[in-house]
Length: 112
Image (cartoon, rainbow, N blue to C red; front, side, top):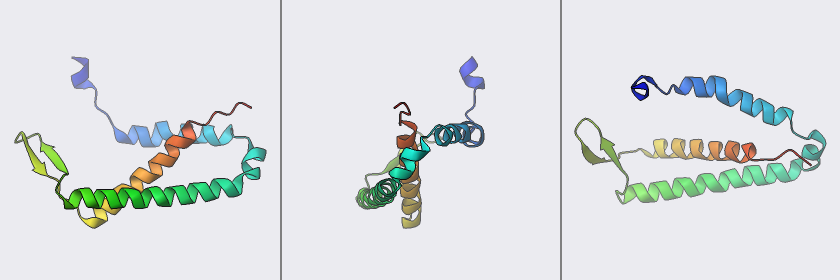
C-alpha cells in the first residue's frame, strides 16, 4: 500500500515548506500600512503572546498536577501517566505560543 511507504519528515516541512510561506507573507505585505500600525502590532503581538504563554503554562501545570495527562504506549498497548518536568512544560508552552502567532499571520488577506 502507498500509505505504508509514505513517511512524514519534519525537516522537509521546517526547511522547505514554511520559509517560502513566511517569505511570501512578508513580501506581499503593504509596508505603509504596516508601519502606520507598527505600535499596535507590537503591543498586541507582545502582550497577546505573553498572555497566551502564561495561560498555557498555568493550565498545563494545573492539568499535569492532577495527573490528567496520559500517553499511549504502542509497544505495550497501555495508557501511562505522562511525566513532564516544569522546564518541559514551559518549553512546550513557548512552542505553542510561537506557532499561534504564525497561524494568525497566515490568515491575513492582503487585498485592499
